[in-house]
Image (cartoon, rainbow, N blue to C red):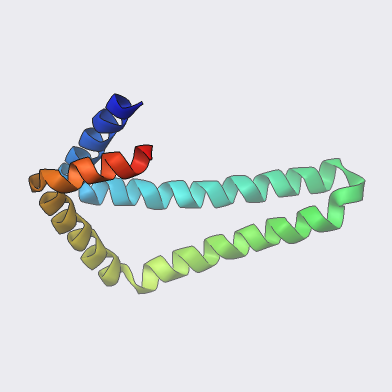
Length: 111
């Protein structure tokens, strides 16, 4: 398990150091996809199971509201999002250069 942690940690840090913008945008897409799947499942349950109709519609609408809030937040604060990506890139570069932190994270992950 420890060796798997080392390999995953190296891969993650190298990717974060090399492609911070792509990984952060993929994360945004995955969050939106997660909320869309939750909304779809809730609407599906609402119209397939009559006993869960109200609950499914409420949670489906809540999921759509969360998507709207997230997209609105992204639209309004895209400049801050770019700054956050730059901060993550800087931290990943520092973390990549400092091997002590690398072994510390492997140790914490395993124990």
